[in-house]
Image 1 (tube, helix red, strand yellow):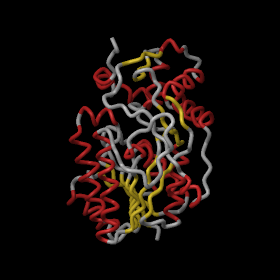
Image 2: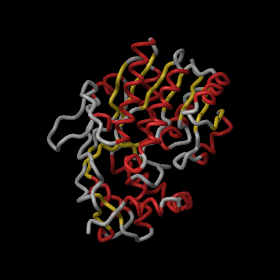
Image 3: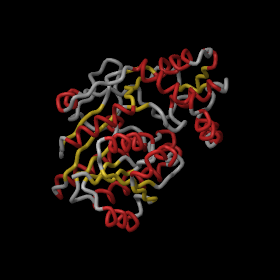
Length: 330
């Protein structure tokens, strides 16, 4: 059983997973609609070892042709609109891709092992002293993005129960690492610091996220697939929690840039305070060690320094978007 279809395989996490899958001798195909966040450069060095289908997963008939052509035995579903700020500006595309697209993927995957990549954000948020979320915690999504992902998550479990589909549900924490599109915190900070531009930080930067290096996330997902943990839910987090402002300051230190670049901006509407996962079940199921944050962020910064052309090219696309999203507190 080694024919694997990866949706969103030209995206940040999906492309890293594709690299790991090839290292483990899977026969892979990627389906990706190449929206602003998708980029074939991420898979350029492996393109001769896979099939690629340019297809919007919300288009059922086009997607059906992909499944007929490739006949996957395993389907790993990364394709999604993922940025909270964009979901606040335009919820429609999140409903279309994350809910309708997922339903199409599930409908065509009834005979395959389906790996549904959810998010820690489906749980809502925590206070600083609350216990971490467990797999049986209630889903209380806060944003249009997390609500669409909770719908995706529940659709997968509904197909498992109603149609006896084999579905693994995985809820990762915030990923970071090479090739992340610079609308996310870490590459935004790196780009702005390199340009000596003000670095936007919501409120006072006290919001807390759990940070997982993308390579670790991909390897963990692959191990769960190999164990065929169907109809199970897994939290996937490193246990490393950092305030956003801590992350910003660590990047500035690595780049030898002044903290005076930090620009506190008006908070995101409905901004979740803290995400934290209890990943005990994952650690009991597979053998996994997580990159510590100091090593991971150093690797990440180095990658962006070595690939400034890519970073700067992508940043050009974001000028108007940044102006819309990051508003002065004054």
